[in-house]
Amino acid sequence: MEALKVGFIGLGNMGAPMAANLARAGCHVTGFDTANTSAEGVQMAAQATDVAQDADVVLTMLPNGSILRQVAETVLPGMTSGALLLDCSTVDVESARNVASQAETSGIQFVDAPVSGGIGGAAAGTLTFMAGGTDAGFSKAKPLFDIMGQKAVHCGEAGAGQAAKICNNMILGATMIATCEAFALADKLGLDRQKMFDVVSTSSGYSWTMNAYCPAPGIGPQSPADNEYKPGFASELMVKDLGLSQEAAVSVDADTPMGALALALYKQFVEDEDGLGKDFSAMLPRFSARSRPL
Image (tube, rainbow, N blue to C red; front, side, top):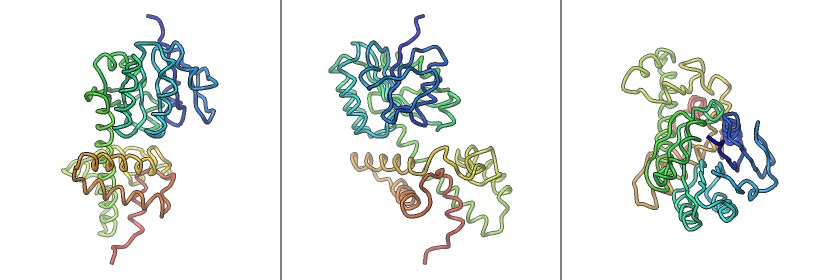
């Protein structure tokens, strides 16, 4: 089988290791990033339009929906009919659907496939992809998912991948806050953190934020808490994702009070406290240092 030709736009903390994994697996990868970053094994292009020429797949990993729309307008005219535009960014549902419509008009397949797993998962090739698009588009993307990740779920039509991602991360943000609150309360009640973990991790308080990504240093599997809260998933990215969840909730008239409160707390943490550049689990020392509001 001839190696896939992949154009990769957006070689940041997530995109660079993803692109390197594709190149390592034998794909011919041409990359572009406005910050002139690069990735191992990836041939760099001078402009975004260059990566689209003759590519079987153009993969994007971008900061937001506005930039995705701009990039799509730039690269779609230069893509070969039947090729795939695969967006792995986390953006608003409406932007994903808008680009899907543009792609269809141009004779290009489109799949929105945001990821879960963070920088570590990108480097290890163990990401989870939540995909929206046609069956044909998902099938064309599947070989790339298999290289870059451990699981890919076809969630439905265009935009469904983004919907799944923002719902997942709304749960994640709210759950992390609850986990950090509980540890801070346990501390003040004189309960040993290890004993707390031993009970909760095998009881009804079981959660991913407790069992797999514990915010308490030295407790449970190794996590960013054991590395001075250097981000695996930065707090400002949680603000972005929670913001997307609330925009979506407004657009469909969904009542999401816990999601709204989680967004408010993370915004306060990032904008007014010392959360910028720290992992989203750094909410634990934040709660530990606080007293109950009057």
